[in-house]
Amino acid sequence: MNFDKEFDASGLSCPLPIVKTKKALTDMASGQVLKVIATDTGSVKDMQAFADQTGNTLLSSTQEGGKFVFFMKKK
Image (cartoon, rainbow, N blue to C red; front, side, top):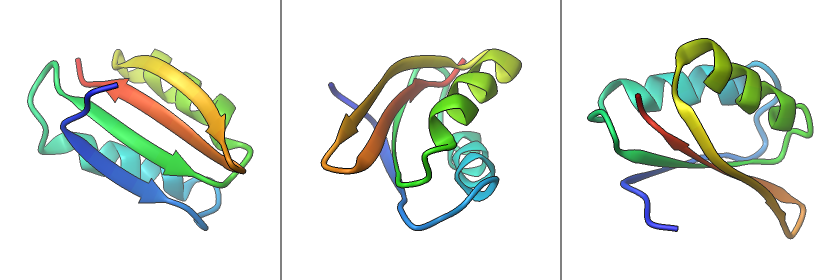
């Protein structure tokens, strides 16, 4: 999937992946896609909840080699 910016939250525990994702989205334009890589298992539910609460779109959520990869489109 094409993306405009990547953020690696590997090694960060809740709530830091969400806090840093929110910060990464602030300087992005509407419609741009952020790729987030995380190792915290709680980030799967957290990313979906974050998308629901903020109106951003979680395009995909997958697991690759023990890491969770998310693609979020900024509203």
